[in-house]
Length: 329
Image (cartoon, rainbow, N blue to C red):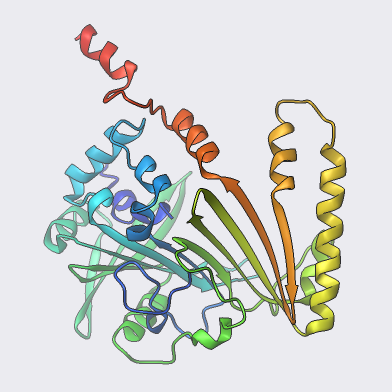
């Protein structure tokens, strides 16, 4: 029998604010190497405290049974035990193998996770200093892919797409090597209270398609999501090389937004109307070498759509489907 344990061990990462401090769910820049070109961070502790987070983790959601099964298997319930997930890496424009690392923080049972991994016949381990390096092979669509990881502690799992990346990650976590300097993103000034961030520290050397040629003027960018009052807010900040490039970038983006608004104006197609409403909520600001695009959506609208997608009904402890299945039994 094939045991897909490896698919579960780091599944929390899929539930994929730069806040440079030591809070439980915050991004800890001292554990990200200086050469990281991009990163994603989900402050799961912060997300759980939001209205959207509470809805996503509602016990009546359609996927709750799967989460329950995973929690029983791993003895790790991401709804309670996961603090944060951080991805970082480098882009390979030549099509070489991915270069990525994941740091998963929470409350784990290392011995139990290790025993589960050992069920994979390809599993192997080796010592590297004070850490144990773990490796196993997945097969997806007939293609074998090797994974590398280390259970650094009962509060931190580290995964790397390549063995050298895992070794480097463990060294950085141990205080060796240069780390990401928060000053490289000082002009992005990420929103306080954001529970998710995606950042590109440097666009230098990245392949830019012809239709997005304006990005050649961008040095770095960041995307954040947060709840702000009665709204869900998404913010994109683009740092240009100088004030002149920043103003040019602002004008280009203003033009693109205007074209989009004109394209959907007066369209009564039910699939187009929501897009037209979203475009009305987009604002654009420019200051020195920074351009910010902000989208603000009423949180009630988001929650209403999310409930429909997740199969959650207000005031009902269980879904009608669950009740019918129980009657059938």
